[in-house]
Length: 366
Ligand SMILES: NC(=O)c1ccc[n+]([C@@H]2O[C@H](COP(=O)([O-])OP(=O)(O)OC[C@H]3O[C@@H](n4cnc5c(N)ncnc54)[C@H](O)[C@@H]3O)[C@@H](O)[C@H]2O)c1
Ligand SMILES: [Zn+2]
Image 1: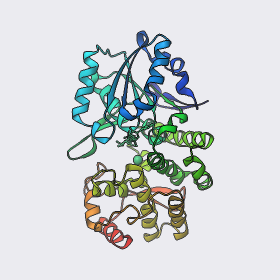
Image 2: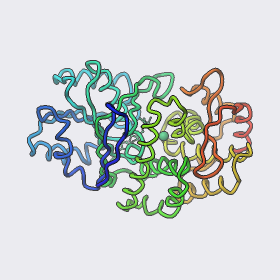
Image 3: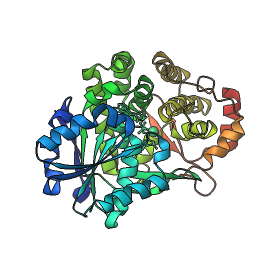
Image 4: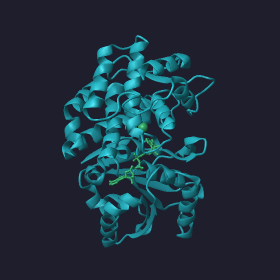
């Protein structure tokens, strides 16, 4: 069992990583259940695989469980489902001192966290993430949001959970494609500032994707430790430190927007191609050796993740992709900060990137 702490004074919390932790959830959740009552929010896929096991165990231990099951997928991060969820919680007499439990992937976590932020001006929530992406990224750090017509994650708030319970064994039911997409975010931590961890990924990526519990646990612990540290230093992305977590995301979001945020390219796949592009663009600008960028592309290819526009099946003109980037939340005064790299584990924030040059690069990168 490993406990990682997010150091945010009165908003600080622990992240527990333990294979099999879910089977012992009654004990782990006890400090958070007022009157032994918990509101569990999940989606249909997670419910089909794990909800009965979790609730049976909690009910046997005397908990009173209320459950809300969302349709799976990004469309649940909407005003419609925020309204349905908050209406349901109020109808069930939720109180400010109650705790909501987000039991699912990033969609369930982001929606539940935002509902908790606004419900009765704020109640508690904790995360039991069930996708690899949620275990290594979205369940930690307190970014919560829903999507709007104008774009993804544009309506939301910073709201830290009170606890995160991570059981790598719950990933056994996660579809291969989702596991691989989550692995892109794992690689990201190596590329940001941990070259030895990227080397570990090169050696162990295949073992992790074969769901070896030790490889999964190691990757989750490394990732969460890195994210917790960055969030502790820059909770609200004010100093530029937290922005490092967006490596590959500016290019990636453009690809996601171009493919309509659809199943053609899921988030982690877009981030994978985006990281490869960020390294190639760093080579173009003279920051990084071509060999380093090739190492990134080679590992992505080895684990069957996209590493280029073509392998992401995106054939748009560079200017179109740049226009998608200009809708980014981080766009300010006509420029967009870009995460570039001097090499593996040497990412930095560049605020002097010329978007016309990026468009030309993308035209040549097709
Ligand atoms: N808050 C943050 O800091 C942050 C960071 C990154 C991403 N996000 C958000 O997270 C979302 C993506 O998260 P995601 O990839 O987890 O998506 P998701 O929640 O849609 O889960 C992916 C798919 O896997 C299924 N699933 C999840 N766990 C499962 C399990 N154990 N067994 C079987 N099926 C399972 C889900 O039902 C869904 O179909 C996006 O909305 C993104 O904006 C948020
Ligand atoms: Zn991401």
